Length: 375
Image 1 (spheres, rainbow, N blue to C red):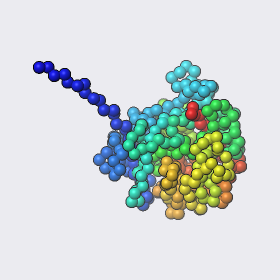
Image 2: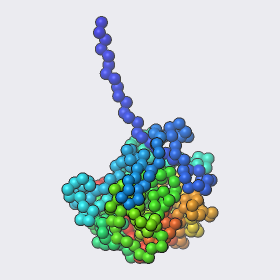
Image 3: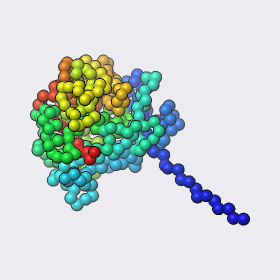
Image 4: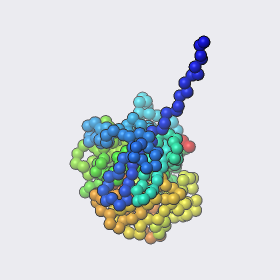
């Protein structure tokens, strides 16, 4: 007798989920990488082998995350009309067209317990993870340049209020706007899980941030062959890039939309059509920031927006410990800019969080960054 065996059923591959753990009481900037064997929340599915190695100039770099989503999908595109055009297309040009970096849709979780906080990222749906609201968007490769564009070879647009930058960004046409708090938090989380260290300036490069008198034109990292690291030259006097995003910190500090601060309360809006300054209407309180500025000692955790990053404590923070970037706050209505400027120094890495100026400030050290979204 011949038995007909049923065809084997194929299980869908598990989503690759990665995680890191932060000990709030440990002054070291390093986080612990989690594996499927030691993850206290049993969300991690993959253990990485090795650590990221950023490039300097045209040297090669590497990262164990290069083969995994969402990091593998962070590629450069031009936006021509409303069409994303990849770098392999004949029409692609960093000088002729707006150049952006795609932040693929990804899923996340943040779990706080016993003085330790775990951060997770998955490239697809997975148990215990939620879709990150800042993912699935295109972030400007460069700080917004003169003419409200994201192109190579241009001076950054400065002396612009946040409202003016918002209006000019939206005026580019369908899909365009100034980047928002959700997108900034998404990029920050991608960095944190990949590098497992709060000290972005030490891990990737200081950026154009130490002892410089004025901002430089965009495109200083164009000659780099690897997506992460810094241009050749003295560290602190060369532009950096993280997965093709140039000047994420250093050169000019960038306004962030969709977030208002009022006497320390951090208010967030996820609807770009309702972005506005100095208001709590259509905004939700995500958390509370410290009243005093200084180096960040601890990040807060929002009960209703756990994906958000904001300083919770600046008492006892210092360069080289905890979260070694500076934060500032102010009384009354304030707006947020991030990344620091050309002379901000060692406190001006990825986590530089300046909510000390009002939205009407138009400074030579403040600029913006574009964002394009198809939905």
